[in-house]
Image (tube, rainbow, N blue to C red):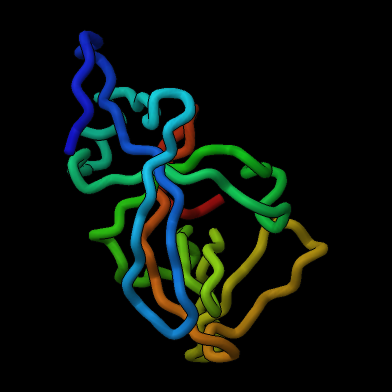
Length: 148
């Protein structure tokens, strides 16, 4: 549900920790209680992206594979209703029971999990159990439409 605020120019999005298991496409969420358990997003970005704020979730980035645009502990917003893979878009994924954020790249009919940081090579999505949690739609300071 949308978190209400006196600030009509922003919308609150729940900050959660994802609960994942390998081989399972579904996921659970656990609320993060620090910082009020939400982040504020400009209403204009919600409207521009035609997003439903009731469905969005925010998570913290873990790891260094998406540096420099996303660093450890950065917060991103995911639309779990948008799971259809589009080449070069960013997604939160359940890969072998771990949550990861990757750019999905299609090459020669195969999907690869692509990291921005060159220290991390591409991984064929078929090399493990991979399911889409949702498309990454927002990072504070910028709306994302995948292409970095």
